[in-house]
Image (cartoon, rainbow, N blue to C red; front, side, top):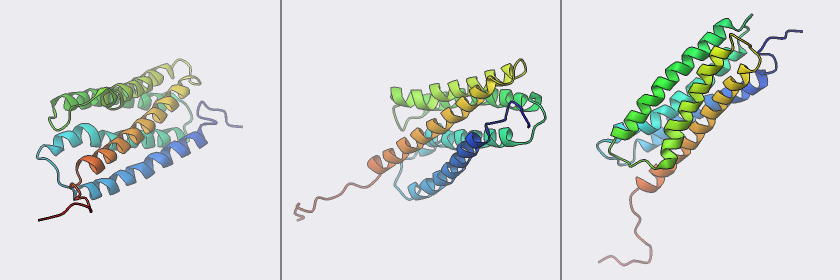
Length: 183
């Protein structure tokens, strides 16, 4: 019986990875549909702050699933990958936070800061710390990697839903009531 630190995680990562992959595809469909809606000139700023990170978070969850499901003989290389990915994610979270501050299309509220900045930063920091700790003891840091991947998946789901509802309610043309008269 093969007992590596990754044993028992296969089903978890098949679910997380499949979900992330499907949601990446849905993001592309939604973006294609939203592209036909009227939007403001500085919409690219808001997209860089609010839309693109969702695909990145889903992509990281999918990538983590692939790394964990690969047939590793030890934890050194995957631990290094977790740590580097976490550090890169921390840097990306800081970039997204700066983009949120500088874009002028939408005034972020606390929920936006929480789901677009704070929680992704926490997920990537957990991933970086888990990568580091995996060199000391491999079993428990795998829960940190799983928590980071799951948090990125849930953050992406929340943010994608938030973006879709924003476009549905803010970008569509105003309807004329059926009972009103036109002269």
